[in-house]
Amino acid sequence: MRIEILGCSGGIGSKLRTTSMRIDDDMLIDAGTGVGDLTLEQLAKIDHVFLTHSHLDHVACLPLLVDTVCWMRKKPLVVHSTKETIRILKEHLFNWKIWPDFSQIPDGERPFMVYEEVEVGKTVHMGARRITPVPANHVVPAVGYLLDSGEASLLFSGDTAANDALWDVANRTENLRYVIIETAFPNKESEIAIASKHLSPSMLAAELAKLTRKAEIFITHLKPGEVALTMDEIRREAARWNPRMLENGMVFEI
Image (cartoon, rainbow, N blue to C red; front, side, top):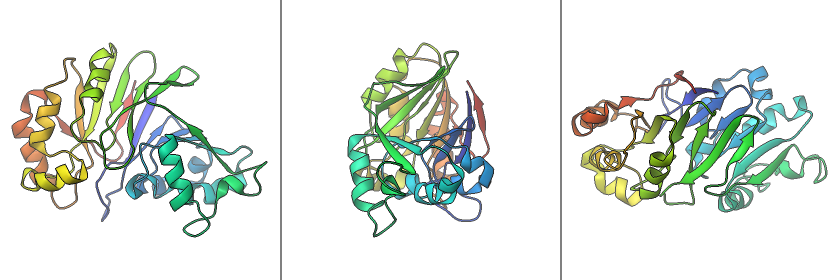
């Protein structure tokens, strides 16, 4: 399984892109602004989009993706997410006011886009690839994902605050190789992190202390303008886990 980071920033500007990962050539985890850097041919090959939650930095390119390639495809784009997130998308995004409802275009019998509900702990099998929604603790209903090739696994936290259930999954995953976890704010903004259910460096260190398995740690969702400060604090407070900053273009093979 090849996992390419298309976007991993908590905002935009210059070359910053918001959250999205391409799995092989046919699948996305989230559909933030990084999706816009794919070619038309690459976009047309995306058959499945797994969403962590409904916030704009994670879904911004989904409406544009389906609108751009629908005429090039012979089958609908499948959007996988929780029942709650699908409801939010239907009510607030694909509602004919913000964007057309592509689950009804050209009609309900032949839609360009369909929804598939996922549930925490229930694995979706895509050939040999296994995608399992895992718990997240955010201000809207949210999940992370465990990606398992059979040989190795990558755990993506999604947007989350303190989350014991996430580490229960990590510690049970015998072939865990990578953990991608968010840290949105520096310590001076810990109150904002708590209110918005994100992590700060001190909170991250407390979370990583719950991990009993060896894994490579990568940090995502850093806020523009505070990247250097936040990473300096992370390296100081979480040094024993040797965390590294996630970057656009990184590729993980599992």
